[in-house]
Length: 468
Image 1 (spheres, rainbow, N blue to C red):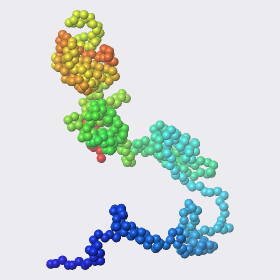
Image 2 (image 1 turned 180 degrees about the horizontal axis):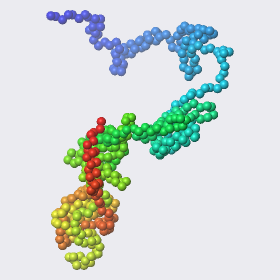
Image 3 (image 1 turned 30 degrees about the vertical axis):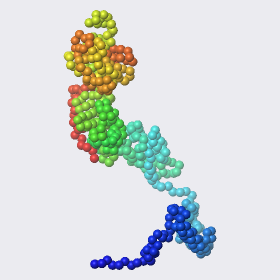
Image 4 (image 1 turned 45 degrees about the vertical axis):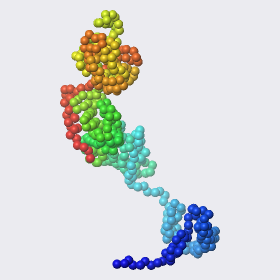
């Protein structure tokens, strides 16, 4: 079927006759052309028409204004209106006092006053009670009764006191204390009430659940922020990072590693929750897992791994567990046969025994060194440096950074040597010193009854499920 014919409009006819005609051309283009002058004329014409049709500028438009109210009409309108009292407005019917009104000689008091006070920092309980209107004698009596159950030092700043004051005989006397109730501790509430003319103390124990809180998650971009977002308190996260950094450099913690944090938690039957100290710090890096358990003994807090081995303490460790054959000091050289200063320790050990770095450091030298044979020198913090001579094989290269306990070579008998041993030297600010003058690192190890209790605690914490 043929499509229906479209009606031809006047605009279509004008466009067909004048294809390039525009009523309002762009005055920013073709400036000075015939089309531009025609557009400028059109614009001036439109502005002229608008100006002629305008009502005028500055001439007010008059409108009807209602007459002002006065007298009785104004009073009736005001009783029906509403306004802001801050601006002095009034509403409702107002009546003047009649002869029946008598002025009050005194205002009556409320029979009972209930108020709330907060214990401030460094503020005594007696002072808070007296400022609330309690008499000095009753305030002292209340403090005495409370002190029999809770020391004043145990009351934390911010403790809320619910106070009820009774009726008094005259305004010159303080109101009697009818009731005082507050949360003395997380697990205890106290209530003072008047009975038989005096105050009696009532203790209200609050049941507490001490199940720890376990928080696990992925490290992501920031270990601290990830643990905080998972619900760990700030101090526990700081303790977690500090304890873990003794075993794992924080720079080696990756985004896909998973943290495992267990903290103390107290849940009251009234619904409140308190989070306490860090109990366990764990980190799962896939191939390597680190777990540290808090262990307090003799007032000191230490961190132990699941086997009861504590952190390494002290400055340096001995590079090998060998037999001392020559000490630091003057001696007659066994091969050269003349007296000279022996600048280190000789430690005899079987050939091939691993030699370990005495402390964290950087390899300053690794190679042959005359009578030292195969020799390695490490630079450490604090102006210290260590040297290891007569190696059978070197396991590091110059410029390499090593950790304490890392294998840097193996015992041998290269250079001027009478047999397999390690010549170990220590320098402080470039001067050779006795290696025995530097405190050696020690590793804490639990044993006996302490180890059994430790493992029982570890098993108990590992059974804690992940928190909500």
